[in-house]
Image (cartoon, rainbow, N blue to C red; front, side, top):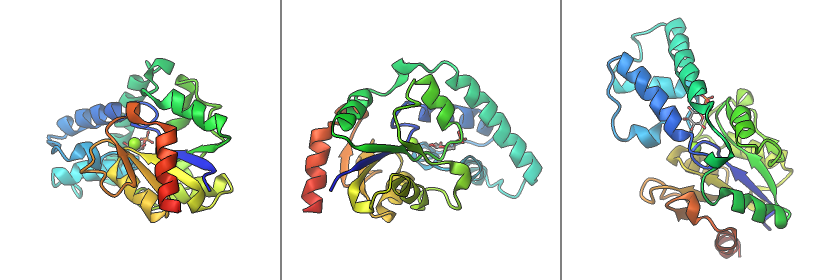
Length: 222
Ligand code: BG6
Ligand code: MG
């Protein structure tokens, strides 16, 4: 029985995925690395260091730098990212999300954030959504990042729920893979081809309607 919703943050609650990409692009240019088109999906949902290593791999430079240099690269990306998110306000909550959260509250559903980002609490504050969720998984406690199911399982356990009680929302293929590996119902937001493993797919958050999603959830749980 549906009792809870679990949300990725970047690219689901707010359009911060473009800021991550912008900041990574700037670092990649500095390192003379050209990001291929698939980086747009591949960088979503991955931890900061996993993302950096992926970028270096695009330039065949994974072994070209020391751990200290890599830490400095990640820090400079995050410095730029922090500047970019300074401007966020509640107006940057993606279309359809405020309504979805309101409808979920009205149904008495519990809600959690499962974001790999250490900046999630700051972003939620800017969006004035810092009290909208029952729990936020601390990514510092994770042993493995998405596509591993750990973060979605931890979010579900923090809500005291079973996998069959929750619906989880993602914009990244790594995230959808993580949800499915956690045996949860996955809502994918974005390109249907990229997110094909999801149980229910919409092109944009504006298309999210809780009643329709719940109907699809009930169909597979029947
Ligand atoms: C995820 C983003 O939510 O968080 C990734 O989709 C990002 O792009 C990851 O790399 C880690 O974020 P941060 O803010 O801790 O560097
Ligand atoms: Mg995301």
